[in-house]
Length: 317
Image (cartoon, rainbow, N blue to C red; front, side):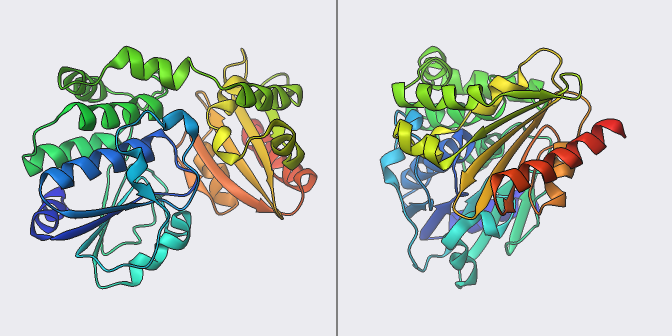
């Protein structure tokens, strides 16, 4: 699909549903809220669905209160942003079975092209970069709310413009969003320099589990169910915690295991050499070359042994 196909369907639609993946991150939240405002300015009937908790750190994002839990509903178009496969949609995937034109817009290399129309640009640092192009093609004028949402999305998914996925185009788009009202200092402070007390306690639990392997090239952390209970936190508070492991000098691969009911959520990050998307794919997950994730059924010790075995093999290869 070329992007103009999506534009034409959006223009023709009277009603649009905008969705993204479970465990939403900044790119997901910023993109769907930005597109909500764009579509409302176009006079569309708009619903935004995400089946999961929205992390408190994103409460400042304009129109985040418009995101609700999914329910079965008909629409002319369903826009799916930043979701590599239909399972990551949770129950929202039921919308794929409706008569709507489903449009999958993403930047993950692991995208399975599951919608009726699919546009995946793996060169984009964030899905919001593609959303920015969509807004331009739709001819909708940017305002402060749209600019703030999309800037937040790009800032977070580019790691503060420090991940290697960042390009000159990323900076050009960010600059234009700033010119259109995104207050970069305030957004940066909210995203990177503000920490709730309970999340700080959860971070402490993760750091207490920090272990280095393979001469310091692998950093391992884990968060147990009891850690959430005892710090009054939940899964929405784990965002960015793995960065502390990745940033350790000499570390090439960082892995964070999070204990859930009967399964373990695994986050992977790397710096220069290891393709963590390849590792995640082995366990049915995916993502990017330097950032990926997967789920392993069973207990945390079994999951730890399985994921470390694969990581060690990749390092030795």
